[in-house]
Amino acid sequence: MNLKRHLINASVLLAGTAMAVLIPVSVNAAGLVSGGASRELNSSASTLSETVRISSASRTVTAQITDPAEVIEEEYLNLSIALFETSPKYCNVRSGPGTEYNIVGRMYDGSVGSILDEEDESIEGDADPDDDNDQWIHLRSGSIEGYVLSDFVVSGVEAYNRLEDYTEYYAEVLVSQLNVRKEASIDSACLTYVTRGERYQVIMENGVDPRVYLAARESEADLDEEDDGYTWIKIEYAEGKVGYVSADYITITEEYKTAKSLEEIQAEEAAERERNLRATTSTPNGTTAMTTTPPEILQIVTNLSTDYSSTSELRMAIVNYALQFVGNPYILGGQTLAGTDCSGFTCYVFRDFGYSIARTPSGQYSYAGRAVSLTEAQPGDIICYGYGGCSHVALYIGNGQIVHESNPRRGLEVNSVGFMNNIIGVRNVID
Image (cartoon, rainbow, N blue to C red; front, side, top):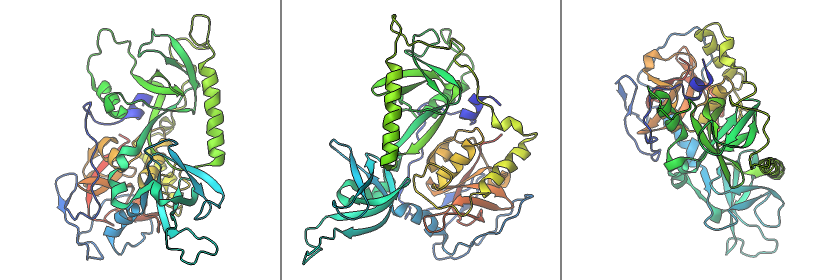
């Protein structure tokens, strides 16, 4: 498998295809199972009226869900998004509900979090603490837990319905050194270079999801006569500076913003200074001094998925890897397997095996791999749940079971694939 296949690894998509629209989770609607069967949610039922049987070699203890409807709802009902109309577009996160408490981090515009509690500011000697005192939100965002003023966040259904508006796309470099070019051409001047593991924000042209654009390019039977054989992605490689990199040597991730600790902010500012310095180090003719010439790279990163003798072996390796994280906490917007949300879990498991899939549930439902029926599901496939749009995803582990970040109370656990009966699709990312 080549890196480009890992980047897309999907059926043909047309440029401009819209992502599934999220709707309020309280809507009680029928969910269609891939393959044509339909099931209707009975919110009063404590068990499912239909048993799903899918054969597999693996078997795991299953946690019991008493109310299937609450799992999706609880995952997002405590959602918050920080929004700022004027500069500076961030607010401080404090250790307690008041400005006298220490600053532990910042929430930037579009940062998501999970609300833990709300309370009025406590002022010593205040006879009426509920009168005219600021309302503070106790939340967790990324690695940060603390308090922000309620004026700066929207929550609940309003935040849920705006979640897709605040996702960002990043290009992560997979090779030792990769040229950034002024135009989308191998003959264009080199502006700078980027190195393995660095991440740069993708600039979406005409608002098109970069994965849709890349899939459309992948599906073209004949390249234009003027095409140089590369597919190019536009990135911001330094503050206010943009250029193009070859899509063959990056992976694209989709992420939510989260709060950042003071230490994270300092580290990012130092990295940004280094990038800006690199971008301004030029030769007399105005191009950056490069150590590489076309082709674009020095060394391609090892492809992890080729280390397995069969697809079945790869699938079970993915499943076994995922299962070792059972018991980890659910953290909305979390960016590591130490704690994340449902789609973050599947995204980061696949990432560690060389696959790039969307960061959000609807993105995975729309773009990850290819659609298969529930009866065709194999270990390592993604099971998609929702009402109209996809709002929850899980990794199928075989024997009718899934492993997933369930909700903030339960964390990462193993359940029956039918723990909710609103399955809307299954995605095969691997083959």
